[in-house]
Image (cartoon, rainbow, N blue to C red; front, side):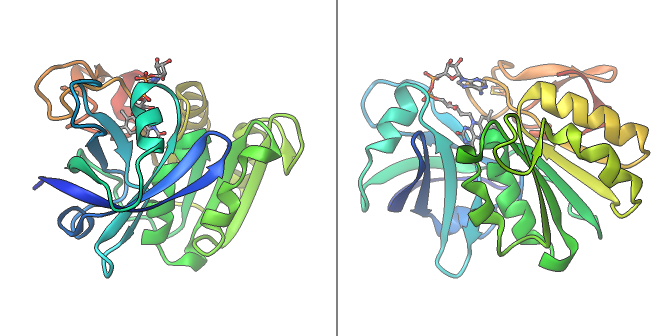
Length: 255
Ligand SMILES: Cc1cc2nc3c(=O)[nH]c(=O)nc-3n(C[C@H](O)[C@H](O)[C@H](O)COP(=O)(O)OP(=O)(O)OC[C@H]3O[C@@H](n4cnc5c(N)ncnc54)[C@H](O)[C@@H]3O)c2cc1C
Ligand code: FES
């Protein structure tokens, strides 16, 4: 799949919570070809540090405007710099990278937790609204600013919080088995922390429904050259940056 390197102009940054921001960039060459589940590799500064680019999922695309968004948690050096970049500044971006989600489902169920919900925004946008349901998990109601981002893209939202401050108390698996019993869904798409994805994949596989997972590994090159992102697949090693980041759950043996 073709990728490009661009100096992308920052259109805006929006604060979503204490430590999460949405950034919209003007990069028509990437916006016009990016698929749900693909990611981009961002150089946040022209200075020597940080040396490595950082990967972020494509969260939403507006092909008419030539823009796309990323939603990121302010974690360390690179994301702190990113958070302070002003409108009309430029950041260098390589993308789109990797393989995204297979979009063949007619009745998709999306399952996300934490920042794993970011790539699911674009995925939801790619289906007709009436057909999509989502299970969203968070630690507390405060983390569920996501409901606004999904409200015009999904038919039904199922919400869980660890502390029960919104929706059902518990993890996404508190509601999943019951939902799957309905027989409504023909594919489940999962992105979030590894223990959550493993637990969800097990339940979904047991129900006999195809399941796609989006993995996150430390990445250096993002281009398949350095092997820093490798993980164990069935009978072979997988490079998350080029073979993934999206896999069928049954392809992954060592997460
Ligand atoms: C394919 C892919 C897509 C991603 N999409 C998003 C996204 O949409 N939004 C988002 O906020 N983040 C996303 N990430 C993670 C993001 O790349 C890291 O948060 C970012 O690189 C942190 O950079 P930093 O310099 O701010 O923090 P660093 O100083 O590099 O790290 C800060 C802390 O975060 C941990 N950390 C950093 N990178 C990772 C990682 N890949 N996995 C687990 N822990 C990590 C470190 O151990 C450290 O504790 C994605 C990662 C991958 C591989
Ligand atoms: S990040 Fe270098 S091979 Fe995947």
